[in-house]
Structure formats: C-alpha cells, structure tokens
Amino acid sequence: MDPLSTALKVAASGMTAQSERLRIVSENLANAQSTGETPGAEPYRRKTITFAAEVDRASGGTVVDVTSVSRDQGAFPVEFQPGHEAADENGYVKMPNVNVLVEMADMREANRGYEANLQSIKQARDLISMTIDLMRNQ
Image 1: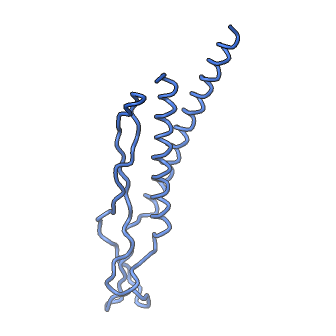
Image 2: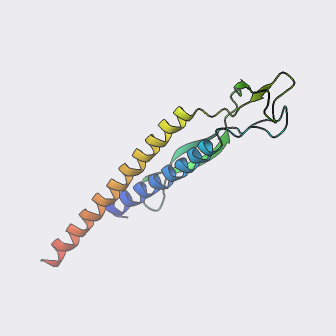
Image 3: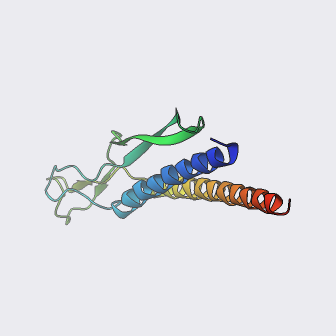
C-alpha cells in the first residue's frame, strides 16, 4: 500500500478512536448528577476508555484501536442532602465519581486529537490530488 493511503488509514483510525472517546466523555457528563434511586444504591460510575496501537497488516501502518471501555473504581463522593430520595439515614447521598473539570479537559483533548487527524487527512488528500495533477500534465 502506498504511503499516502497508509497515512489516510492511520488518521482515520485516530478520528474513530477520538470520536469514541468523545462519546464516553459525553456519557460521563450527562450522568454527572445521576445518583442511585434508593438509599445505599450505587450512583453512576465514570467510564474510562483505553487505546492501543496495532499494526495494520494490509497497510503496514500503526493504527489506533479502542481496547476497552471500563468503569472507574474510584470512591464516590458523598453530599449532605437529607431530602434526596437516595439519602441514607444520616442524610448523605453517594454522588457519581465524575469530575466535570476532568471530563471537560478530556473532551478538549479528544477534540484537538480529532482535529489533528482531520488535518492529516486533508493534507494527504491534497498531496494525492497534486500527484494526480502532475501525472495528468505529463
């Protein structure tokens, strides 16, 4: 496979991985206040995503692949909300282990990674187009 096609494949795999990362971050943000429905029930657990570099045999390039989506086993913060339906006998509610600031930073980083891969694809397309134009003019 030619190097420009390999570059397209590698960048496309990066875009796919970053879009999956954005989906996970969005789920975490959407559930940042999702408590358990009954006293003592566990609230939403933050999801995490793991990537790995894999060699694509067809192109010879190293692509990005999502290896797993798992749950963060960190502790749940508790808040004093005696009127909440999920409050225990002392008035404390277990809250999700989602830190909105961390999720926003992760979203920004995933967005930048996606944009960088998109620029790589645009550059490779331009190079392919210039090559075709050169061949046409000969």
